[in-house]
Image (cartoon, rainbow, N blue to C red; front, side, top):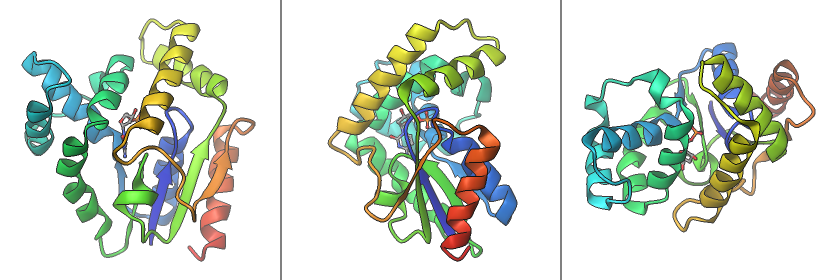
Amino acid sequence: MIIAIDGPAASGKGTIARRLAAHFDLPHLDTGMLYRATALALMDEGGPLDDVERAVAAARGLALVDFDETRLRGREMGEAASVVAAMGPVRAALVDMQRRFTLHPRGAVLDGRDIGTVIAPEADVKIFVTASPETRAQRRALELKGRGEAVDYAAVLADIRKRDERDSHRSSAPLKAAADARILDTTDLDIDGAVKAALAIVEKAGG
Ligand code: DC
């Protein structure tokens, strides 16, 4: 069974994907980490983020990168990832790795922006997780604070809006719900409620 979870930043898709993977004992790939790691490799080289050739080389060399999870999950890297993810050649360099992940004999759970539309259009279940920008900014601010980053709610909300705009309007694989995705709005749900609703969608689809 392949489960595709897409949605904007801090919608809850990552936690939902992780919990569904644990529930169904499936491997899970957080595809945002690939774009974050590409951006981090570029920044560590000291190059500009908009150098497409170097960004593609960084994406191709990802297996060699020692992931530093704390830096990858930081606020700065989310924004940088959104910039490199808008480049078609960078996305193309990361497709095979993501496609291979879907070929696990039991299936897989992948979360990102284009899983149901581009990476796994054949997925058995597609869920598009969303929530209001204000709710997502509150969640992201709490998460960053919990990891010791100094945060200002207004700045986080501005980041979220900017990223939504860039991720949704880029020409290559923009963030959008697949025509056959179920929309899950988590604005008024806590995480347990959101996971329960996602589980119900998967079970209804025959999972
Ligand atoms: O899900 P995230 O916040 O870790 O993603 C970081 C950025 O990476 C996001 O703003 C857009 C990009 N991304 C993408 O374009 N496609 C994906 N499948 C996953 C992430």
